[in-house]
View 1: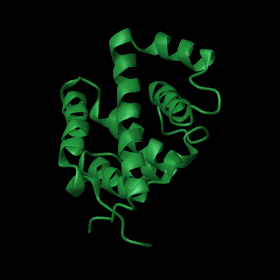
View 2: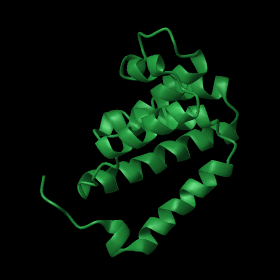
View 3: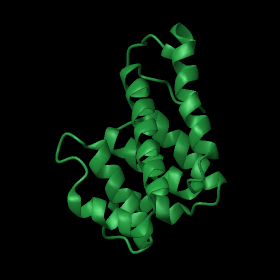
View 4: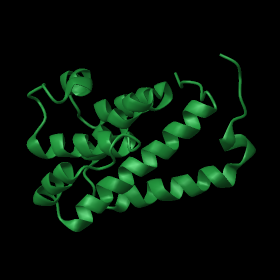
Length: 146
């Protein structure tokens, strides 16, 4: 793969702004486990190797099981995710792939049955943040960390 401009080097203030969103997410009250599932699933959908690598390692460090990570791509048929997690993963897919149908009414109704308006808003923000990171990493061919 050809080397590309790295935005964190060329425009560090842009990165700093995205990290501001990350700082918000860290103090938002969104469960770490939920945030990692969102980050990994969106990154899988977007094909972001850099983010998949980073966030699966973080999830394992935070106590996530290897089995659940191995099955995340098949979450709809794997019986290792709670109903709450399944709704979060469905929202993640629909918002990440927003060009298809957007967040459907059916998924939205399930979400508001499970989450209050604040937690729902945090889920949407989490999905938005990782999608920003994915787009930056993919378009600049961000190299994997070892």
